[in-house]
Length: 357
Image (tube, rainbow, N blue to C red; front, side, top):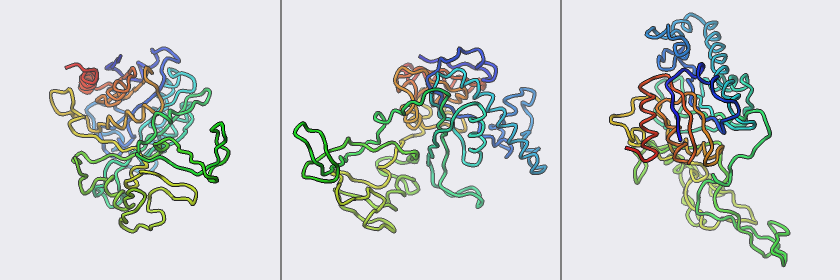
């Protein structure tokens, strides 16, 4: 059900069969090796001869803006080459999610387009609210997931399987014919109840690792709900700076109401509950990867673009969060990672996800 190979994606991807993958979900380097982030030095990943050297980007970029542009162009060309092979391997019209950080997400999007994909949307994932490390940055901590589509017929996303779970049911007055068909909405004495759950948004939240039965003070979910106000049984307990008419909840029209709905504004969005324990499940020691992704969030992304049984590709597997999520969603998985330590970690986590020791 899974295959995780220790290799360079640029070399292995060309050997895989065309039109064989149902979806791409991957977390490539962010292109910030130029900031001195050695773990993100994609040029070293491309050229083994650079291993052990200080960040090539760090030396070049500090020499002047022309070198920053050189880094940008080099990164886009490198990532576009990898993604071009991914597009060849993907089935026509297949979707993909490609991770990026806000600072260089435009580089990643350009690489996706240069590889022949269409950028369909961007999901913002807010996962922290602590003070920034620099006064030149804003908060909260966030990352982007770029939704791309391979050439081919446009497919629908799996909306119904991914509605945001709530206790609400939208009740609308309407006119109902004798055959139970609805003639009009917003008028009449009949009642139409729409499916529970909201349309998936291009915004997601994660609780902090320390959140348990109650959220910690800096949890982004808690802060959003406190500032939006809490709706209880159609009434509102005002929060900070909230107007009673809207309150960050559901705009109430004169001809519709929500029955049984409650909670703060976070109920509009997918909220992941991750933990440090999850990241190291199945491992003898703590997961040492510097950017471990939330399995809960990865499952949400996979569900939107792939049905159970689909084959998921990740050419930058890292420590295997996408592999775990794919297997838990009943999908098959193909992953490539060139760091031997992370490959072993990903394999152990994948085996654990399947119920192995």
